[in-house]
Length: 226
Image (tube, rainbow, N blue to C red; front, top):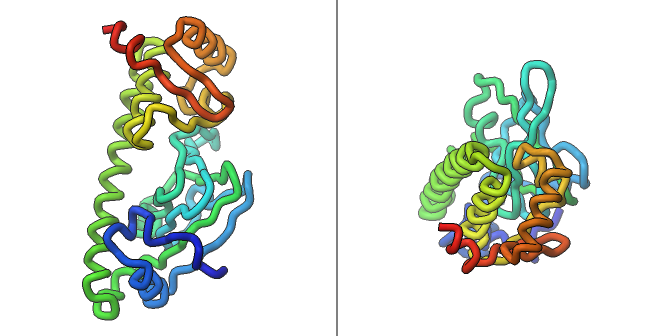
């Protein structure tokens, strides 16, 4: 697939790298972009994988699979998010996470071994990309800790508020993009009907503004909660 017009240099992995340098990086590592249709698996749990993926377009979700084959939603992935890094870097460790496309998705796949050995060909670009890669791993840990904090809240309202506050931090705005109610209920690990009632109650109280695919907390009402 042709990679121009995708603004790859704007991805977090390529921060401080020019568009021309990104082209050289792709050529040197043999990276390639693949399309995955909505509802399809980008990666299966326990699947052998040798590539680090970066979402270029679309949205996906991470599904945690237990030993009985049951799946639970862990978190969503949007443009710039990385996937497959654990199974590519540590193939000896069974990885029980699957990645499923919530929309049509474009993924940039970077062969891990080629990434390690491309330094002499890429010069400064290689060091910058590796730095950005390490920062991405740190962000992933932050997301995991945020998930734990959200689910540790005592009430559904507190879960939803903290979830939206973290979304504000990541998206850099008060009006944040959110998934559909079924998906949101999975992320908050709650009953969908209970979530719908809570959203309606918060909206009636003027605490929450709601659209088809967005929500926004009222800052003044939130501050009044103490």
